[in-house]
Amino acid sequence: MIVLKTARELELIRKACIISAQALQVAGEAVKPGVTTYEIDRIAYEFIKKQGAEPNFLHLYGFPATACISINDEVIHGIPSKKRVVREGDIVSIDLGAKVDGYNGDNAATFAAGQISPEAKRLCDTTEESLYKGIEAAVAGGRLGDIGSAVQTYCEERGYGVVREYTGHGVGAKLHEDPSVPNFGTPGRGVRLLPGMVIAIEPMINAGDKAIRQMPDGWTVKTRDGSLSAHFEHTVAITANGPVILTRA
Ligand code: MG
View (spheres, protein in one colour):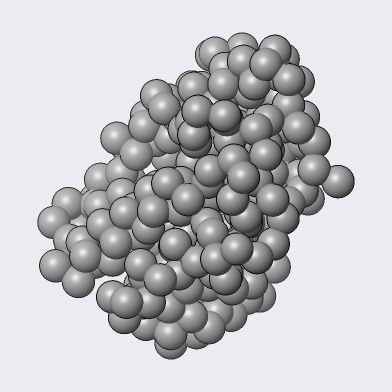
């Protein structure tokens, strides 16, 4: 069931989204060669708590940390660890959110550790740009497939693999609400987009093939072919005046 949000609910979600965006920014600034993913996670945790909010990934479905931190060929759901040291040239995807006053925010971005390869840079830039293509298509009166198609077309034209198994989602009183928001689709197909819908759009894009594999830790998802993967996400409100990005720091 898709919950349409009232103006008041949108304001509460916006508050959670601003904290989420600021936490992502702070965590991203911590990405440097030599830092552990545990340290990045602690920085995000402390920041969110200091705002009077709660890290909404922590303990969700049993996830043990504030942020999912996924490096290089890890697509999503990497578990922060004291043993995982970020190295020069890594690309580090951080996905996190905050809950405050009963509402959630969710966002992600891939950060460069030091100097990264031109290939890695192109993947990150393309993935981020595809997120904005998806957001532009999140127009009231349109269809869910318009968003997925915009992301998919942009990435596949550039030779990248679009992960199918994981999607964006509705955001509200729950972090994960209906509808699922795939990063692939057919224009004009799927659920109609209505003012009051709040969705997380989050392309997960592989430099190589779209296929993934689940690691034995039960969380970490990697590209099957070992290619790099990037992930960018915003929480977006669909309004009568067009899409509004809520996760702005
Ligand atoms: Mg999300």
